[in-house]
Amino acid sequence: KSKAKLQEPEKQDTSFDDVAGLDNTKKELEEVIEFLKDPTRFEEIGAKLPKGLLMVGPPGTGKTLLARAVAGEAEVPFYSISGSDFMEMFVGVGAKRIRDMFNKAKEKSPSIIFIDEIDSIGRSRGAGLGGGHDEREQTLNQLLSELDGFEPNESVVVIAATNRPDILDKALLRPGRFDRRITVDMPNQQAREKILEIHAKNKPMADDVDLGRVAKSTPGFSGADLENLLNEASLYAGRDKRKQVTMSDIDKARDKVMMGLEREGVQID
Ligand code: ATP
Image 1 (cartoon, helix red, strand yellow):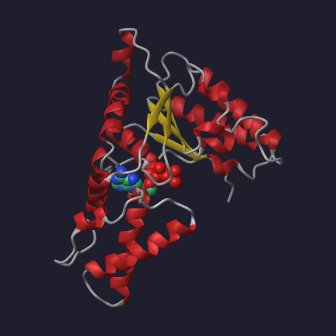
Image 2 (cartoon, rainbow, N blue to C red; image 1 turned 90 degrees about the horizontal axis):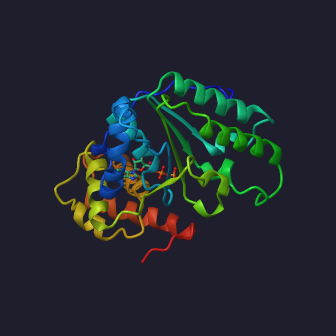
Image 3 (tube, rainbow, N blue to C red; image 1 turned 90 degrees about the vertical axis):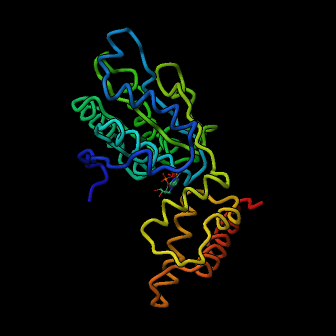
């Protein structure tokens, strides 16, 4: 299966309700949603919205989820690629893939392009560790020229995500490119509880389960870690052929996930 094959846009049924917490981040994105819903309204009054947004935040904090939710809320097509897809490509393939994707997105405008792990293509030139330089540089150059090449009526919002903004090539951050930064933070206790509630919805919970307590005992957990925790807990219940997840399943699952995080060197305080 060729990684370079262009996917049809996915229809998004993700909405802001699927994203717990991150209220300020959502507020910042409202403007983009308004624009995508009715670009002409903004263009007619001469308003120029930033078309390149850089989402910055630790892994698993919901950057991809948020980008999907923006597409779902605005009801526009969502094209997505990940920087890591480009790792093993032959020279020229990555650039072509970028070009094709932008062309499609323009055809279906208003639309969203999402580039996950932009640092894999967009790391500062010269900061690489050898290997595949030509390919990455060509891909990056193509991306830069696409970002510069929008016509006024092409309402494509490009959202990129990274947890390493420090290593990005400065050319990507120039005005007119990814010139707006959106911070996606790790969830605090309150947000963790809300995330747990969302992911507990499709899992029958025993009466002894107290998600508030779980939220309290999981500092340093991202949204993805919390989702993983509840999934592990339901696996424990499933193995025991029980129909409900108990607090003891959750406690065991938390210890397991926590051990994995410590191994990765994540600070749990
Ligand atoms: P990465 O940097 O690893 O790509 P990311 O920031 O893009 O991570 P997502 O892929 O969006 O993170 O998150 C992974 C999963 O974790 C989501 O699909 C969702 O189920 C869950 N999740 C993360 N954050 C939240 C949140 N704020 N609310 C609800 N679910 C969340």
